Length: 320
Image 1 (spheres, helix red, strand yellow):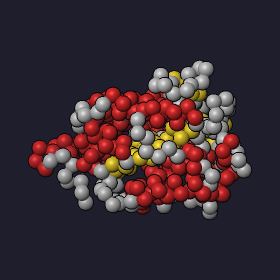
Image 2: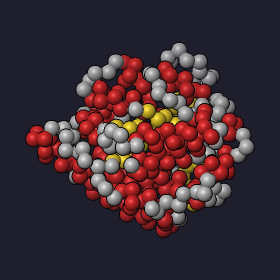
Image 3: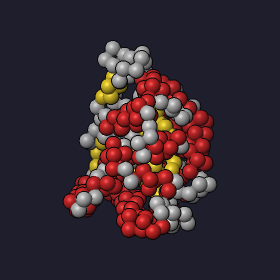
């Protein structure tokens, strides 16, 4: 499914740009993305493609693989501040957490991922788990990107838990594929670089392992990406729409919609111009449209699921 490819592409580019760019509010390109769809629809295939691109570009060190617990996560973040986590196992952890079936180590993994998302514009303080730490016991401006695959049935089990939604899931942009049209509507508007590896090289240069995410002493000196006046108007209009939904009690999934759109617009701006990126009207329009489409799909499906779950069973109708 091309929906999964869009999410995977965003996670790839966000990771390559990590700690190199920020917007005027200090937000980085860190994205937490959740691809939702039936089994055997390409979720894992898109993740493998990202792995292959990073490996061929000399950036395999951005990948973490499956992390067993919070100690493994802390050790990896301590070593490198810019990471991409792609995994299916975390979907199982979320489902278990939703039914209160996790041990302390699993809960610690999810809590630290939440904290890493929230501290991308500041500093992540390392918990004491026996990992060798720097003198400040902290990571300056971490940029951790996460891409998780989950079935629709699993998603609605997790959504039934207000605890996991508030503690973790509300950081994610959920990209569903149960409705047709999302790929055609948005993928056709993306100009794919002639060579993604050539573009990556233009970002990282000839020495990718010496990137800004490597080592405890690397200074954080990102290029600031500003919005044009036209883009700012679009974001203010989007914020008013978000406020209406939040006032009606829909903090999730609308609460972080602008934040997601701001980050995606910044990524799009960097794709257009690396040396002097600026969020133009077309960048803002695409990012807002994509986020709004994903959020509205999820919002409407949640309402449908809630009204029919007692008859059809949780998530059973989302199999087409």
